[in-house]
Amino acid sequence: MRAGMATMLFNLESLTPEPLMDLLAPVKAVGWVTGVFGAEKSFAANPIIGSPRLNRLGLHRRRVATAAAMAARRRRAMAEGIPAEDREAFDRDGFVIKRDYLPADIFARLRREVFSDPLPAREMRQGQTVTRMIPLGPDIAARLPTARAVIANPVLRRLTGYVAGRAGEPHAFIQTVIAEPAAGPGAGGRDPQTAMHADTFHSTAKYWLFLHDVGEEDGPFIYLPGSHRLTPERLEWEYEQSLTARDAGRHHHSLGSFRATPAQAKALGYGAPKRVAVPGNTLVVADTYGFHSRAPSDRPTVRTEIHGNLRRNPFAPWNGLDIQAAPGVRGRQVDLYLAYADWRSRRSGKPPLWRDVGAVKADGPASI
Image 1: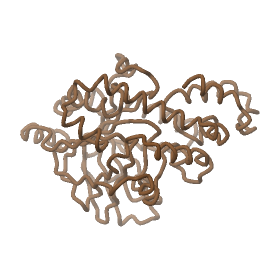
Image 2: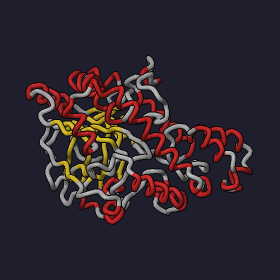
Image 3: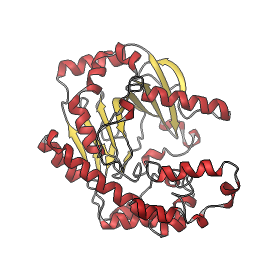
Image 4: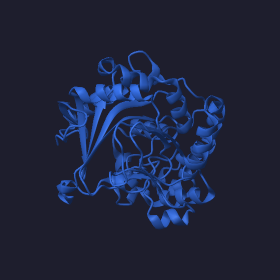
């Protein structure tokens, strides 16, 4: 893979003159090249990844195929630690659903902890949906011992690593999704999460331990079963998208989170999407390389979950050995990310994506 990519990368004719004229171009170029061999996905931000010329030569196709092969290899090394029924469900569908995940008394205790007191939170609005995030860093986790035990559970960590195709340190937080259909389209446009999409070009994992019942009308998670597998048809589709993604005019598509229309999904051979309407105390773990979305809700809804995600460099051959497990970093990944985002916001003068709303109840009304 590396030799083939390197040949492509030295063909710089596809780069626009603006970045090459930049005095920092040599420094930027190192970052662009490094990104190609890592998890970077943006066709808009990285002129190498976004180059139509290099992608016609097969750059994106090579990245996707190599990442899938490496994930399969790492999963084989992890398979022994995963229950057979979970492996079968994942291999078939791309997600695992575990109802009655916690004993009833522990689940009740978890809900009491999460919903009792206001906690430091951030909020992000996407159209008619507000997402609230309460990071579970060491200070907050110490106040929520049941939540801390849930996210530290080795069974959950092993399953998350298997689904992600690489073991490591998940980012965990309390997440509340607040649907406000009365806000109307003027609230910031359509919620991009309601479009069927893949998060990136390689396997990643997200999990949700739902603290509320999620009904059919409550904006449930939707997944196209089997779309986590890299078929020849999917690889060809990835190639076709890579040729125009940089200039597609669709923000998230250009950032490397490809959107698929219902017609495209059907042409790729996928069946009907599955709406994951489940009772509280259900754990869902999904590979978000598979096509998924959040169903729009026509009524005001609030749902809270323990949420985690795991996304690492897809090209490394090993599991574990995650720098995010280092002392001072482990458990603080979300806090560190938010601190960096706040710093960038102050420098640029632009408001941060995740706004600090102070201490609020996890299931309280939106603040933004």
